[in-house]
Amino acid sequence: SQQGEEDPQALSIQEGENATMNCSYKTSINNLQWYRQNSGRGLVHLILIRSNEREKHSGRLRVTLDTSKKSSSLLITASRAADTASYFCAVAQGGSEKLVFGKGTKLTVNP
Amino acid sequence: DTGVSQNPRHKITKRGQNVTFRCDPISEHNRLYWYRQTLGQGPEFLTYFQNEAQLEKSRLLSDRFSAERPKGSFSTLEIQRTEQGDSAMYLCASTKLNFGIDTQYFGPGTRLTVL
Image (cartoon, rainbow over all chains, first blue to last red; front, side, top):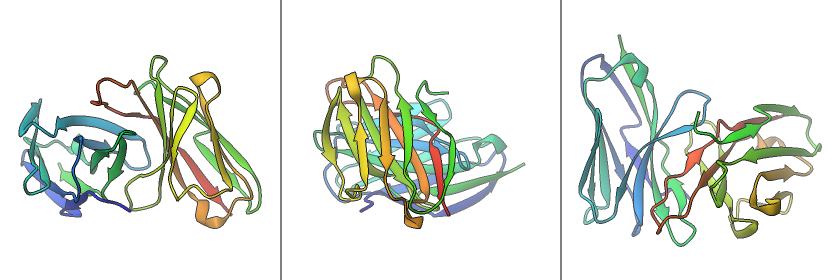
């Protein structure tokens, strides 16, 4: 069963605007990761945040993690048309570190 | 390109046929994962290997599915007697176990269509 749940399911913005996606999960985690997937392609790793971290930055990406609320957010600043993709959060669980994904947020950035 | 390769990229087969997919992970990565993704959904875990040992299998992995990783290098996923419900994208990921903080690097996937 899928555990990470992204919100919103779809988001359409204009180039230059910021995009915020949220993720909620149900159980304790080792870490939380965000991935991007262009239509019909493989997943590209964006950023990993450990369970003892609260915020992390990478270029135009900012990720927050609130373990008390079991939620995370991904902020993409100054969006570009090339950011158009589906974004997934995934939580790593157990000794296997298998990833449990949500259904994703489909982001459309209009030029 | 993450360095993880999968072949073939696309496979169309008739119901009842057997298919085999291959994944070549990043060379120094000791863990290899298989996931399945259907349209509009996130990937779902199928199984994983640490070196050549298959350590966990999902309940999604029926007995028609078998995976191997001989010598801890490449891996194969075979589906016997395919069904239309097997149509999906099959994704492989690899990682190097590093104190439990692992980034999984995904391949481009094999898209299976069962007619």
